[in-house]
Image (cartoon, rainbow, N blue to C red; front, side, top):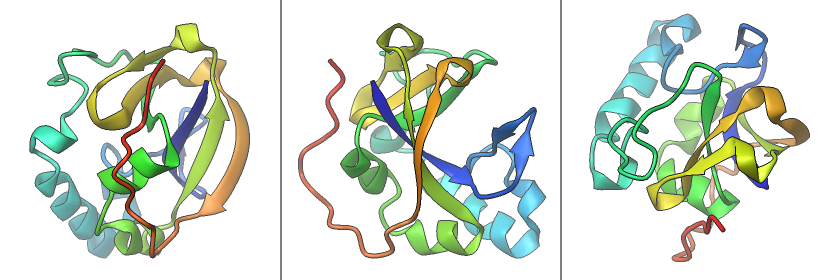
Length: 138
């Protein structure tokens, strides 16, 4: 299954690129503040944490968050792509065995990074077309 994820270009934790939520303090005060503002705005039904998503309920230490489609990723991070780009993030796609993916609402997934194979890395689209079609998890 193809997964889209926002990863930092260079910063890693235990060999895995950091995402924009958990380790944002490593990015310096300006970027940390912008990403904290983003995280605080992501507390609604459209941005449930895996712990509050009734389809996922928890995230295990070997799991990382991603999305079922590029559209779902850009819908999730709407209005925050410039801040993410300035902080050094990009979009990576991974191929992950379906058995290693748990699907939540709004196109969000958690997946086992150890089972993932990197496919592509590309800059964030700073002017994404926001499609009305949510990601589908089959």
